[in-house]
Image (cartoon, rainbow over all chains, first blue to last red; front, side, top):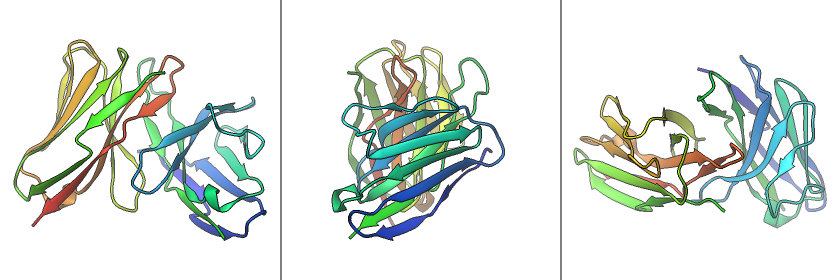
Length: 118
Length: 110
């Protein structure tokens, strides 16, 4: 099946610094990628939808100036957590949608990035 | 907004017993998807159901989509230790963004 990679898998940073997370679709093109956040033992919460060549669409309550998303190519989307704080510590997961047909919405998830802000 | 609810939140079963998780949407869904997330892992796509009343099987897993396309279930027959994990249902909202249920965490007792 389709493969999505994420880098880094784990990152520890100090409060106030910025962290960039990369999401790549390795063997398919993804015009749309999604960024989720998952707190321990909770469900995935959609943060934003990343569209290649256009601005990302953020969900209500997600600060677009804090979580910068760039989708520069059909295989790469990046999420930058700016001025990170301890409450931003979470598991960030990206996914990419492979359009296999009009009614197919298969999403392939990356392995996730565990961010710890100290 | 649209809500996708899942029950139960947790389920402990003896190995070999059956397991079922239920998913309900506040609105009619064009399709519903199921994902499995192993402990420490990321969600893995299992299946997508599109048609009203659709039933699909994958070995010991049976997926159903309700007639009204507002509910769905996942049934596992004769659970094994490899079935451990959290099972999420998810459906698209009116903007085609995927909304996830809270998941059902399955724990297998040996």
